[in-house]
Image (cartoon, rainbow, N blue to C red; front, side, top):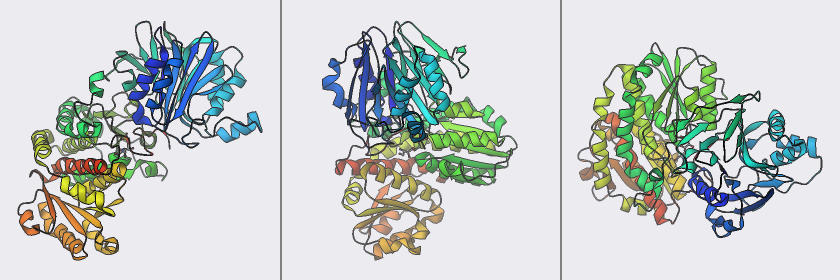
Length: 584
Ligand code: M6R
């Protein structure tokens, strides 16, 4: 959710920042901008649109120090004026987050003064200008005491050949180079630029020059933050010969499952220790992560026979939930930075619950809160739509449920990567994609675990193709939604549970009788014959009933991808969205 990059070195800053912003575009792509400092003078360039809109002009920006921003608009529409950096007086700033009290601050300190933008962020540069008396750290500290909300801010000041960073509730990292140093929202911006990073804590202020980094904590005491290996490499950002990251990442599902299985071996005993005596599990996350939690509920209730609930993090954190010390909260987040999920985990900690983080991001905020971190081995996921991280999360959750139940889940999971590869090699989803692209709406249906995947299939399709879609329990259709079925609708019915196949096939018949088109994603024997000539059947390999989501997920992900292409959408950067949702 907005990406920021800062550079202080001896090379031309605008080039380095531009390349860094390109790597952070998954955080937002409504507008982009760069400001640099040269001989004590700030120059800025900012435009509505993707980062590439800056390319032809960046050479106008001289200087070896600068900051840059790629925006996901919250306050103020995407426009040149609302693009960052915001420049005023001796300062330019870029901001990721939301300043919740910006209107009050504007009124209090600036009365009727007209600002240059409609953003909440401009208040930061105006306040800096107001409070600055030659002491940059002092001015940043003063504004941190009155700003409410979340922010990672990078600043350049005409009086200081370097950049300053201020952080609260939004991620900011420092990168250490050779004669040059960096700041960024996220490690991919620094892939190939530095091998060591530090993660800033809330309340930290960092001063970064080409020669070094000074970090001050909340009390303005100098601190050293742990140096960590930068895991993002240029190779992890490569498209691997695919036209889009989404396709590349779906093809990496088998590796994601296998790496997750292997990584789990290193944390299994800790998971066992943390979850000992737990009587109830609450699983929380947002979007796709929430959907993987729906699968986990089935695992925990079936294997462990203790109550498990799945809660949308943004609801859970505000509903005054009953959480006791005998409750375990499993917080799932690809990025580990989703504001609602991080806050839900903090709430669980404050209630004395055990917190398990399931995340793809080893240094994220979520990892700092949890009692134990279960790594998802998806590797860097660039496409806004989650794919290999979803399957990695399901693998991790299956293993956690196995540990709770005392079952060797790893052994069962061992066979899955091969079946995922088979699915990828043999699946033919083109006809169904064509049906979806031409449809007036797509309903994803399923029962029990298949319903959980149906919700994810629907989310994926609407997210990247913009085709209206809903996920429903197959049995619910007749209780209202069937009224929407007509010749223009498509029902995609997921049927992998032999036990419930007959029941789900009832839904197929109900849709067909109302002239809706039907496709079935299934591994149930004999289904092609039963539906021959009446429905499109997409076969996936047979496997353990609890692990079928790892295969049906590939089908719905490819379906969304191919439908998006048919409709000429950019699958990697769907409209209005960003990958890392660090604001409420
Ligand atoms: O980083 P997180 O897993 O916490 O992100 C949660 C959701 O924003 C995310 O899963 C979103 O729904 C995906 N873009 C869906 O593909």
